[in-house]
Amino acid sequence: MDNALQVKDLCAWFGEHQVLKNITMDIRRNSVTSVMGPSGCGKSTFIRCLNRMHDLTPGFRVSGEVFFDGRNIYTDRIDPVLLRRKVGMVFQQPNPFPRMSVFENVAVGLKFNGKKRSRSEMADVVEKSLRMAALWDELSDHLDRPGTSLSGGQQQRLCIARALAVEPEILLMDEPCSALDPTSSARIEDLIEDLSDKYTIVVVTHNMQQAGRISDSVAFFLLGELIEMDTAAKIFTNPADKRTEEYITGRFG
Amino acid sequence: MRRGAPGNPKDALFERTTAVFAFGVLFLAVLLFALLVRESLPSIRKFGAAFLVTGTWDPVAESFGALPFLYGTVVSSFIALLIAVPLAVGSAIFINEFAPEWLKAPVGFLAELLAAVPSVIYGLWGIFVLVPVLRDYLMKPVADHLGWIPFFRGPVYGPSMLAAGMLLSIMIIPFILSVSREVLATVPRIQKEAVLSLGGTHWEMIRIVIGQHCIPGIFGATVLGLGRALGETMAVTMVIGNRPDILLSIFQPGHSMAGAIANEFTEATGELYLSALVEIGLVLFLLTFVVNLAAKGILKTMVSRASRGI
Ligand SMILES: Nc1ncnc2c1ncn2[C@@H]1O[C@H](COP(=O)(O)OP(=O)(O)OP(=O)(O)O)[C@@H](O)[C@H]1O
Ligand SMILES: [Mg+2]
Image 1 (tube, each protein chain N blue to C red):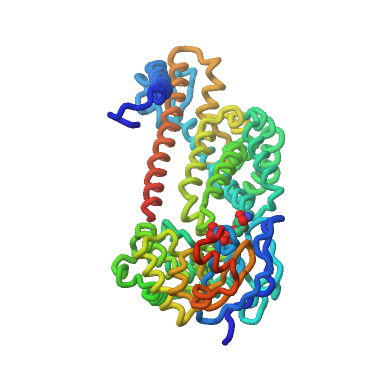
Image 2: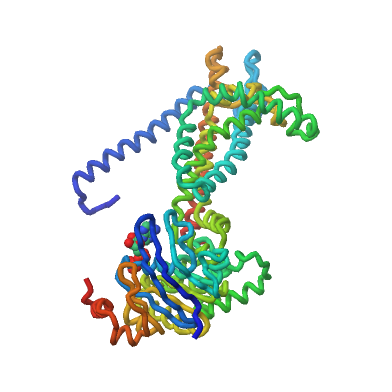
């Protein structure tokens, strides 16, 4: 089985404060990996390391290796801008651009890579992305509406469509459902399952049922360390580490 | 304000006190306006609307028109904005987005310091440094080579509309810079990250977030600067040449409304002369009022469009 990402001995610091300690993990291609753990254990920090989202954070430092396409994204002269086109991201809060329409929101990333595209090419990509994000049926007649006029759940799917439009290989999602109601989260969940045929997805979630339903593997973090990583079935029924068990049974701290 | 439901008595007292002050300010503004109107009545009666569109300013013949002053104030302020806005916004972007951390605080402090320098000091610097440098290294060569363009026609003396505009721009840059920096700093981090996560470069990030979030704020900063430029008296009068003529060339002297009042008030003999000067003050008052009102209106539509996401 080939890996979309290989993380080796990854450590991360904000100033003097070490947030990640020797994380080593393989992320299989076209799988869904859930990252779980108590608040503050470094989940967001971890997935943001995978597309170098911390580059502009003053005082942030990493050591270790993250291999993508056989190259270490932190050393091998990787352009972080190009990396992020391949490794997209969806955030906890839906963050469409407020002064752009639905169409412009989805198309905005296409303009970044400098390739000129005709209006009809753009329209094709927008339609395809909105379809993948299960928004097309709702919004095909409202593409000129402001992106921020949508409901929270629609906005989050819009952000997913926006990320998909630049055709990434990997999609990182940091608690994509935590700001949403149950119906909207269920739709995002379905979406993640559909997308996992074509994309590698790493998703941070606090919702164990959700992690159980959507993930191929689950990684459990505690205080900046990766405690264990296994199939969802194994982690939730028979975890190897006692701390994992304590967490999933709710007996944790 | 809550209506109907009985409020906390201390809150009510506080509300009433603030209301008194708020209305006090309004009352003062109205009073000032009334006073200006009353004192300029002789001039208003004599010249009517022609006061605003005639260009003669002849105290001996008692014939007064404010157009050269109006023109000088508006044009020099406009030149100032033309120079100051791009420079200030560009510097704000550089300082906030590119400059190393240790540089940010000193630059911010320096900008605040520059804003606090009395305008007469700017005027002195203008006379001794800016005007000679501009005259020898910019205006003379340009007038020699491009003098056929009406805006750059000679002869070059030094004190000029351009010198006034440039000096004004230097004076308002600190304002626009610090407001722009604050506006840039309020952009939600998650919006910047949205651009980066889509494979945008640092520049694309800046461009998008400014377009999405900063235009109303930068516009507000610009109006703030314009307000200061329109009313600036001392520095302008020291470098503009104080000639009440309307000349198309920005290398030629001009005059300003505030400058005219300050320079001629003490020597204004005769009721009509004095009243004409006060009327210039009235026009300046109305001009700044209208500019601020228009700015508020534009800002309101921009902000409401932004909140509706257009
Ligand atoms: N920009 C930052 N500067 C300094 N410290 C930070 C920064 N971001 C996160 N941290 C610290 O790093 C640690 C891990 O934070 P992180 O956001 O990765 O946790 P998390 O597992 O995602 O938590 P949650 O479930 O609450 O989102 C925390 O102790 C936090 O205080
Ligand atoms: Mg987090």
